[in-house]
Length: 190
Length: 197
Image 1 (cartoon, each protein chain N blue to C red):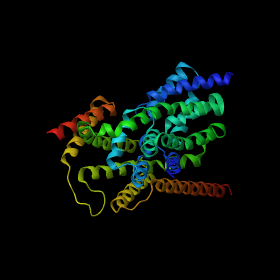
Image 2 (cartoon, rainbow over the protein chains, first blue to last red):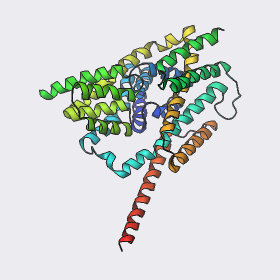
Image 3 (cartoon, chains in turn green, red):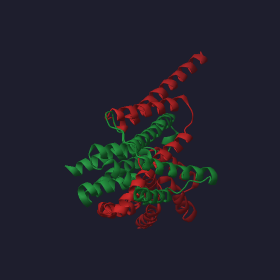
Image 4 (cartoon, helix red, strand yellow):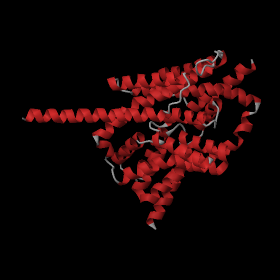
């Protein structure tokens, strides 16, 4: 039953997504690829949409996948699923244990998983990079070098890093997405 | 009656915040600060900082966590519910509408070309988010070891196409961190007693 699967899957994502923003990117990617809900390309396309629209990535993702798999009701169920764990946990904390973070044990567990979250994000980005540029996902795949993607990556990275160094500010991700879209058209038309 | 009024106000404020939270939860923090402290004086500054710390360190999107917490503090359970539903509504509606037309949109030739480039950009954005968090990470033995181990395991398993959920990495390191904490806690306690003798 698709509704139950959607609900439970997003409940799980909601319950373990620490680190905000891209913290749950590895888990969402695994989930959508395993269930064949989205291809790797669709997944990347959708992150761009989620990044350029308001709202948390997890909620956007739940709504989008729910809708694509099971219409409006699917979107609603997946969204409720992803929000429910936070809602319950925060309710308990706000009502009962406001000073939860003052316990040393809680603190050391929370700071203990921080490197894991960073590792998950970096490893996911690395895997996606190699797949996109070299067409290599797992042992046995033939390499196919995609110079267009590499070129766009380098231009985007240069803009972002130079902006950070000289302006001391983050370059707007939405603007970066627009530029990369323009570059995508240019390299494909040439 | 008073409570219903507060719930309605909360609902409207959170609806607005949900509509303007581009770029994830951290962008929302400054919006929240402006609405809750500066404009309305609903929350004290200390309480706000405590709330942000809780929202960031518990699972789930920061925006949702913050909305639930503020809602509960101002108007109990119904306040929490009103605030949480409200902060989700804008993204739900927008994404639902997009999901209806997205495939048709992507089948346009130039749009598909543009998204070829955008896919690369998204990989960069994820990498960038990871690198930024990496720079903020303290250079302790634990952090370096865990980071290297997680990346090595994940890349190796992915190359061998073995599925191993990210959930396990989080649960295993959380367990190890707890064991390590208890170990040092009891050892320190034991030593303290010896000194007293």
